[in-house]
Amino acid sequence: MYSQFKTIAVVGAGALGLYYGGRLARAGNDVTFLARGDLDALRERGLVVKAPDGMFALSEVKAAGTPEEIGAVDLVVITLKATANDQLGRLLPPLLHEGTTVLNLQNGLGVDEAVAAVAGDARTVGGLCFVCVNRTAPGVAECTMAGHIVAGEVSGPAQARTQAVAELFVKAGVKMEVSDHLTEVRWRKLVWNVPFNGLAVMGGGITTEDILKDASLEADVWALMREVQAIAAAEGVVIPEDFLVHQVERTRPMGPYKPSTMLDYVAGKPLEVEPIWGEPLRRAKAKGVETPRLEALYVALKRAG
Image (cartoon, rainbow, N blue to C red):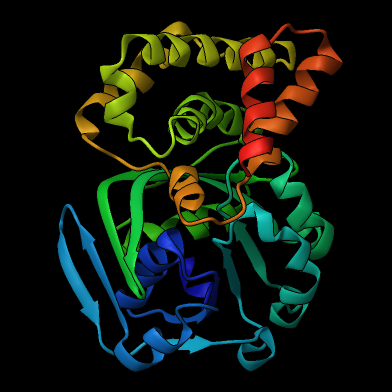
């Protein structure tokens, strides 16, 4: 079924775009990257992916600076930071035809709705990337934990096309699972993102290893995870305690991993404050859930970003 995606556009050539787009292109798919800062590098040198299963380089890749250069495709993979979602109204329409599927791989809450507002619910699939990957140079992505993707429909249970997207990625060497409950998956991802990305920024640019070596910061991690757990429960999503334990224990062997928001902070880029911290906090207030640590972190991140 995955062969229905004969043409693919990857919107964004950061860490996720290079890694997943590179794997899709390496598998023989017709992939074009919509890039900004890395456009010249991609056109001149191609891309390099360093991953646990080995390194590969593609000396020639298709890259464009505008969506009009690409035209309508069968699959759009959005790997932009959510801070650029005000550009979706300009970037997406030229890439869409009647049967286009749009896979959104952004973090946080409300991001799928932002994509669907432009592409339509019927076109939009959301995805969560449980992966450790950084862009280390123009056109270069380094993955230290391949992890997996969980994808689901923005409205309703998984469809045949959701399974087709998963098959496409699996054929490219990426583990992808399909869920009938995308909202639950997004809350589970926030259990990790809220504490580790936030505290890495508040520490001035520290790694996950730095956080877990500091007893006080690790205590903050647990407290923030439990606040996210409580908000999710108020919204009907149950996250068990052993899931929280797993998030911490899987992070310990990552070593000095640099969360993506921390890298943005160090680079002076805008931070994805609203979808990762702001929207969960607003939902907590709406449900009457007390989240003092999340609120303090949100205020501090707004100031930092």
